[in-house]
Length: 152
Image (tube, rainbow, N blue to C red; front, side, top):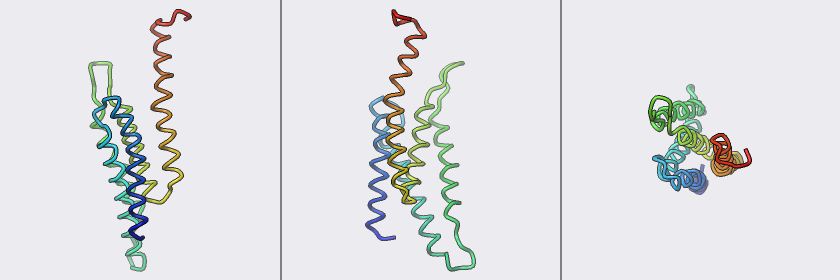
């Protein structure tokens, strides 16, 4: 893989992860812009490294399976996401959406690293729509449940 392709993948991963991180940042969440970009970049780097190692060792007796390192990313991100979830009282949990966005940007980074740009872009766009539009829908539902609308 040439340096130009690597640069494109790193930049695309930064932009896509940054979009989701930006939404978290403007909502004042603990895991914001930098955290999301770093998770996306880390995932991209692991995939690039995995593909690089696979290419180097493809003609040897012990070929490297790139999916093994990617599986490690998916498992490892669970620990990071678990740390983003905080129990706030007996019946309240906070950080689930942020944990989910960290998981998403990890997947976006994996897709970019693997060269699946369309999936990475489409998932980023859909995630942003969910974060912005579905949030408004949720507020409307909660408002109706609490009786704050006169037309209930």
